[in-house]
Length: 185
Image 1 (tube, helix red, strand yellow):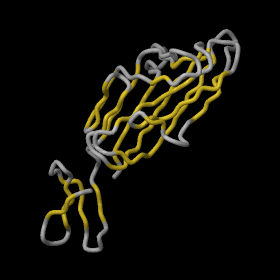
Image 2 (spheres, helix red, strand yellow):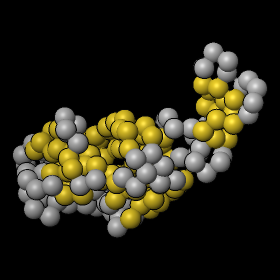
Image 3 (cartoon, helix red, strand yellow):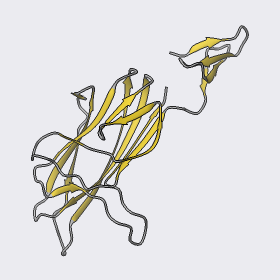
Image 4 (cartoon, helix red, strand yellow):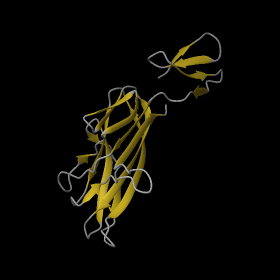
């Protein structure tokens, strides 16, 4: 909850580190400035499940931005500031088998699977001499407290389905995973 300061309208809204984050007018309407709480990570490595049909954490090996959030252990995002946060991920999948497989992704907060949040994607089978490819994009809003931790989990019924990175070709290289988070209130 923001702290108020000032004796006349508008009140200045400050966070727990005494940073000005917005204004509150005489009608109690609040206006917030740009968020200083955000993070962005990616993986430039292929990833496979360790065991089929088993929850496996998605990992990241590149931290692009971290402001009041931090990546630890390559797979856990820790929030320094509570509030409502949006997070969005993009997952580049490849299937080198002759069967279509349904792959599942979901968020885990503080070691607990978030209810009713799974996303399932059918990854096309190998065809015309090339791997089947699909991209899953998912976005969520969560209320978190300072110190809460987020992981993205996934499961595949076959080790032939991977999160795939691709080298630069006509365009730039393709990471296997992108993840962004930002506090919205």
